Image 1 (tube, each protein chain N blue to C red):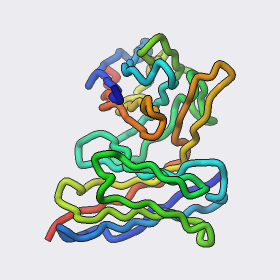
Image 2 (image 1 turned 60 degrees about the vertical axis):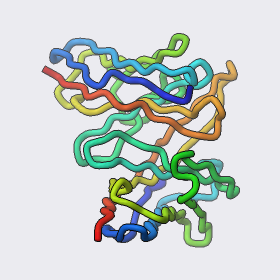
Image 3 (image 1 turned 120 degrees about the vertical axis):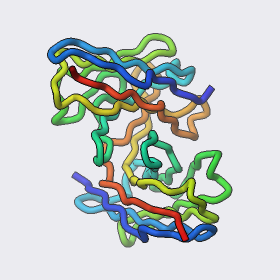
Image 4 (image 1 turned 30 degrees about the vertical axis):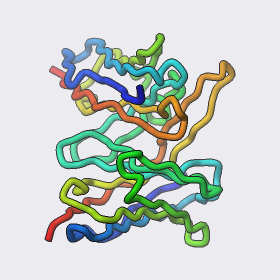
Length: 126
Length: 108
């Protein structure tokens, strides 16, 4: 079973760039899955940031699209998140996850995140 | 609409049955997925693709759907079920992902 582990700086200065990596172990990221970033501000709910497909296609949260980038490094079996021009509002626990998106025999769609990293806390402060 | 709406809080007596709901237009085309999150922990998947449970999830957890509303039912709630529950799906465009605001479940 694949396991995911986030890593990166825990403190980022305002207006700087938040960069995180999610390393996969026990399985390959070159599978028919989306590789996803989710964040959770202190005391708040989950917010989807974006995703990358194993083939390289990306989708991003519209509210973050101008500042976010997600990339895949198959040689290192990992994917990464970059978020620029950060402010205090970007302070959160950041999770990476493996996602599956498909449909059943009735043509009803489904989407789920079945493998999650433990999360890493990023604080934006000077 | 690309939003998913959940009640902020629900309570249930120990051993009783509780239903947590999630509403949104996208649920007319997408099954809701349900996650459980306990304080300080990452979310875990509990129900996906209408009513499928990953390995290790107790069978007291079940899912259902009707129109634009999905439900997570816990039959015989246990103390360890006290947590926040989030629903999730893609939006109607199929290119974005949305979460409900979460429901805090208290087991009395």
